[in-house]
Image (cartoon, rainbow, N blue to C red; front, side):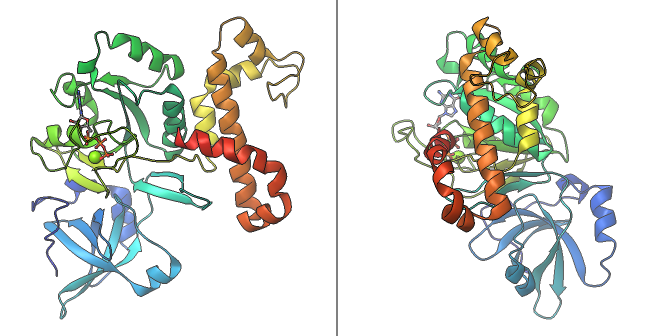
Length: 364
Ligand SMILES: Nc1nc2c(ncn2[C@@H]2O[C@H](COP(=O)(O)OP(=O)(O)OP(=O)(O)O)[C@@H](O)[C@H]2O)c(=O)[nH]1
Ligand SMILES: [Mg+2]
């Protein structure tokens, strides 16, 4: 068996429970008898995967059958490893059913969802005071976070740069009254204890957010070690310079598991219709009062949503954001239904007028 020498995690002994194993995984794994063992994907290297197993860390390749089927495990997945006793190597032969799955519409024109992390309990949407702060982007992250089945938490970082963080906290609450917002400074450590209720043993958290918001700085603070490279302020230009380039899962001192991600350049919502419903409950509630049940909240008479904007009860920018995301959803659903090639050929033109708009919003 090949013991890992990867930089993904320091060598450490742990039980399966400590790496997030639950009874459901145990049940799913019970059909495997013989030279099989479970492992959790900590990092995907170019050709092999780094995995946490019961008593340490190993590297393993993917079976030919899984490659052929395009079944690639994501960081956080529990997988079945086949042990070749003579060769002392391990091969991933199956992926156990995922408890939750955090994905985003893939970059470019790929229509299939792109899994960022699996078996996540909490998603920390990290945003930072300064140039990154953008409520519309937070809404977009909330849509995919809600759709994943994990609980979103907004982490407002770099509060040391603010005189009064409560202004930004109130702004975030204005778009997500039920979501916890935790103000911190990952650099100084101030407020980081506010994350403690989520950093529980065996629970898995993934950090998402744009490049430069301080995800790796937070991981380093929690690990009490400079494990992850972070950018120097001088070098950081705020324009898509990515310091972290691979996803990695770390075991924190508290016993929680945390995944650091490269900054997301482009966030597509895929077909996350439930995510939209959970992110905009205020608009959906207002829409129930519209005269027409299929009201698009554009120019229709008797529109309760537009009336709420006129009366100052709903921000026009929030309605605009909702409508953009709904258009993107319709576009993605149509693409999933008839395929991108046919969409381009037959009905690309009418939808193309929104394509640029959708692309711009994704990159916002
Ligand atoms: N003032 C201040 N700067 C911070 C804080 N947290 C991080 N930074 C700085 O922000 C810059 C980017 O931090 P990183 O941790 O590399 O950001 P990241 O989100 O991991 O970026 P990518 O890996 O590119 O996705 C670095 O210069 C950090 O020192 C903070 O709380 N306050
Ligand atoms: Mg980073």
